[in-house]
Each structure stands twice: as C-alpha cells, then as structure tokens.
Image 1 (tube, one colour):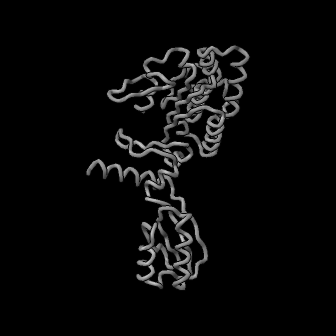
Image 2 (cartoon, rainbow, N blue to C red):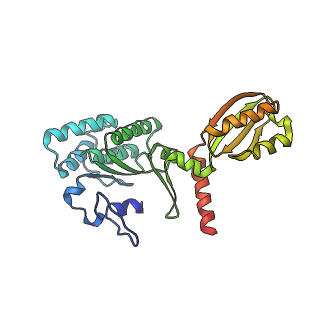
Image 3 (cartoon, one colour):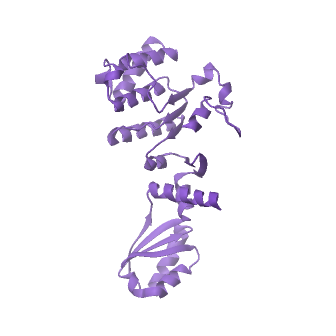
Amino acid sequence: MTTLRMMLGVYRPTAGALTVLGRRPSDLGGMLHQRIGYLPQHFVLYPTLTVEENLNFVGMLYGLGLFHRRRRIRELLEFLELWPARRTLASRVSGGMLRRLALASALIHEPELLFLDEPTAGIDPILRSKLWDEFRRLNEAGRTLVITTQYVTEAEYGNQVAILDQGRLAAHGSPDALRAQALGGDIVEVTTTGATSFGQDLYQALKNMEGVLQVTFPSYDKIRLVVTESVSAVPSILNLLQSRGVQVQEVDNVTPAFDDVFVRLVELHQQRLGA
C-alpha cells in the first residue's frame, strides 16, 4: 500500500507532512529502523532457505545474539504453528505458511512500531483470531501497530480506523465514532405486540420526537429508530409507546456490521466529492 510505503520512506510524499518516530521517514537511520517492524504484502525472504534459517538470518540482521535469537525463533514458530515445518524450505511450504513466516520475521526483534500490510490474508479464521489476540496484547504492552486489512470486519478491532477511498481519506475515528458518523446516531430496535397496527399516527409521533432521526418498521412487531443518543432517547420512546397503548416486549441497541458502516462512509465520501 502506498501509504505504508511513504511511512517507511520508500516513497516520498508529493504534498503534506509525514513523520514517523518524530522524524521524516527519509531521515530514519539504522538505529531507528531497528525500532520498526514491517510485514510487506508479498513474500520477500529466501525460498532456498528453510523456515528456521530465514528467521535466523533476519534475527542476525537486527543484531540479536545467538541465545536470544534461538529463543525468539522457537517462540514465534510455535505461536504461528510453524514449528513442525521449521526445517522445510520456504519454497515448499504453503502460501499461508509463507505469510506466517513473513509475520514472524517482522516480530522477531520485538519492535515498538509495527507496520503490517494485510497480515491475515490467506490465513484460516482460527489462526486469524489468534493473531488479533496477539496484536491486542502487543498494543496493551505499549507497542503501536499500523495495520491494513482486506477483511473490513477486522477494522473494528483497532483503536482508530482510517477508511481510504480512491487514495483519499474518506473517514477516520474510533469504530464507535465511525458507526455514528455513518448512520447519524445510535440504532434502537423495539419489539412490540404488533406495532404496525397503530399505523401512520404512531410513525409520525415517533418521527417528531426530539433526538429521533429515522423511524422504520422492519416487521409487524418491530420498530427500528436511529437516534442521536440512545441513553436519553429510549425512556422518551417507551413513554410515548406506553401512552398510545403499544405493549413493549424488548428494547435492544443494534450494532451494525462494520461492512455496512464501511459501505455507507464510502458512499458519503463519494457524494461529497461529487457535490
């Protein structure tokens, strides 16, 4: 991805300012590079070396001593489920294994800043979940991770999410903030005993309430509302329904899938560009 390559100093920005670890990427020296780990999108290690030899080589490049190197290699190969294949040539392992080997090489020197370009591509769902647990552990230990992903649902695991559309920043913020931005507020779903039988009058009464942005009836017994803030809106909604004789069975806050959030934010960005 172009953005990551600019952060790593491979490409120079044509406009704007960019700093990594307090410096321009093009000015990062050897000592600063040792504080950075990078997982590229494509395999760049040596197919004629074994899995273990590749990691040993990378560990030597980062100056890891023999015993530290051996310990880290075993830790990573066991964690990434590559230990049984440690003596297999890289050219003879599967694409998923190559991806895990590349990730191990990015982690071997325990960097404080990690750039990971689609780290879970081609990896089965169980290991993918395990990797995200490790990413969270690294983050909680004080490390910063910049991750790109082709799985949109993974984006919500981050503390901050940036959505790019045609090379431009379409939206940025926490997952909850992006949901609110995409939908205009919180989603509340009320299950009733036949709300649709109350007709247009109930719809209009709900629509006219302060803080209610949208009202739909997805089924005969459900009311779905988009509100500016669910905590303050729900008591007023329930009072109105009760005053009109609507029996409420359940009230839920609905969390939309991040795929839907992504699509909506891209649509809004494209509308702004076309305006």
